[in-house]
Every structure is written in C-alpha cells, then in structure tokens.
Length: 121
Image 1 (cartoon, helix red, strand yellow):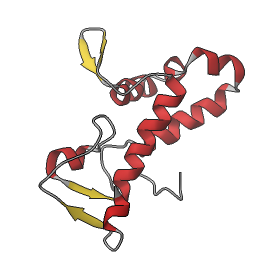
Image 2 (cartoon, helix red, strand yellow; image 1 turned 135 degrees about the horizontal axis):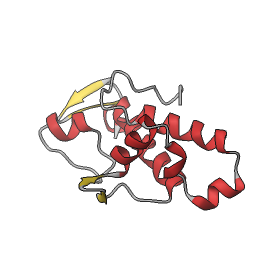
Image 3 (cartoon, one colour; image 1 turned 90 degrees about the vertical axis):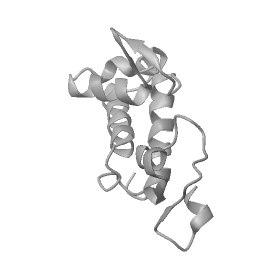
Image 4 (tube, helix red, strand yellow; image 1 turned 120 degrees about the vertical axis):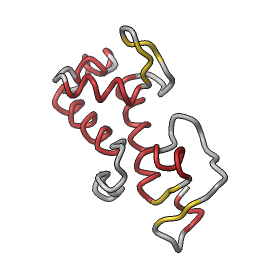
C-alpha cells in the first residue's frame, strides 16, 4: 500500500480498502496509513506462516480473538510456543521460531510508532 504514495511518509484517506485481517488498526479506524502499515501486514503474514492459521476470528475460551490477539495473549503468558505449527516445531529450533514470533508481534504492534521499519525486521 505504501508504494501508492511513494512521495509521502504518511497519508490519510476516507476510502478504506484492503484485505481484511492485514489492515492495521490506524487505517481501519481513521484511514491513516504509512510505511508502518506495510510492516503490520508483514507481521500478520509472519504469524500466519509460523502458526499455519489465518488471521480470521476464532474462539479462545469464552471470547472471540483473531490470530494477532491470540498470539499476543500467549506471548504475554510466556506460552508463545503454543501458537507454532507443530510440524515447524518438529523440524526447526524452537528459539528460532520464538524469534520469528517476536518479530511478527513487533510488526503488529497496535501503536504504529513502536513498529519497526521493514529494514529493521
């Protein structure tokens, strides 16, 4: 999305378009986007790859969460390994997968200012 506005670091639009699940909160709520919007989408993709799940809503206990919310909850409870695709856990070193999870979570940080740039990912 950021390529559309190549000369601008940030922009605002009243017409919100994009693929549901990959759009950052600031874009959905206020039409604000920047290069950090692409970082958010990248983070969602990373979480989908390591978990083998889509960022659609699913039930977790008694409430509805998407993959991003579920990953954050597990990370805060020091249970991040539970989000991993079991076939990846069997074939890769767990600390590498946890590092991928950490980078993915940094990219989907709700506050865009805290998200890394793509070169920092």
